[in-house]
Image (cartoon, rainbow, N blue to C red; front, side, top):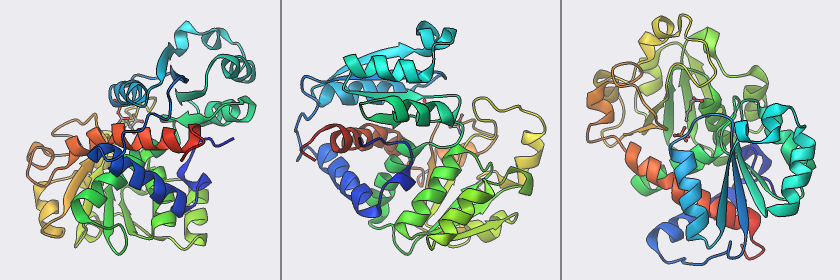
Amino acid sequence: MRHFVDLKDFDSDRLQAMLETAAQMKSGTDKSQPLAGKYVGMIFEKPSTRTRVSFEVGISQLGGTPVVLAASDLQLGRGESVADTARVLSRYLDAVMIRALRHETVTELAEYADIPVINGLTNLSHPCQIMADLQTILERLGSLTGIKICWLGDGNNVANSWIEAAALFGFELWLAGPEAYRPPAALLAWARAKGANITLTEDPVAAATDASVIVTDVWVSMGDEQGSRERDMQPFKATAKLMETAQPDAIFLHCLPAIRGQEVEAEVIDGPQSAVFDEAENRLHAQKAIMAHIISENF
Ligand code: CP
Ligand code: NVA
């Protein structure tokens, strides 16, 4: 069974092949419908705009039928086990995408399901987002190798998936944020053991200088307490001044939703270097490619 739970479950050749399929699907050179006659469930334990719509549209464009399930409408929300939910859904569906509060829900669903399971964001990772981001970088900059990527702010789920990507694709990753909000040490150790070139710093200028990509995310993720995050993260705001230290052709990425004036200045996210809406569009193409590769026998 080929699940899509985390980037680190794949080798870079396979992910590269998915990114090529994503580009072909976007350009229209690949119009195949590998999900014809197939049903794909979508379970949501948290809100979503991009994931919700891009998966539903993508499944339909690939010839499949989406089945959208709010977790609160399922018996899962009343305490039915993840294992039984997985066994039952496997009898009706051909694959299932889940946005879960706890990462363990996704790994348990994958353990007991006889169908592919796709991670549509958990507290620990957001692999579909990073596939769309990698597609956007390839479109704008042509290559992932040899470039410096600068992450600003919280060491959150999206940052974790960037760390996995750094271990697989060989770009230089700088993470600038407060020490108290660093990504898990075990994940960093795994990535470094794979040869990843990752630098942690509390100096945003050092991280942004000569970077090809500046990327950030909200300071308070779904499920996080606000606490003192807004004060703690202030030095790591994506500002126009910081963008000036990056490469002249650097792009700005943000998975969205964004809070202008908080983690990013409006003139950055709405400025000429911002690629955030291409990035959002690429969720559609990247996820279609992921589904084609893990659900269809033909990819
Ligand atoms: N970037 C992202 O996953 O957006 P949604 O929460 O709207 O799905
Ligand atoms: N880190 C954010 C990403 C939202 C798409 C969150 O988990 O809320």
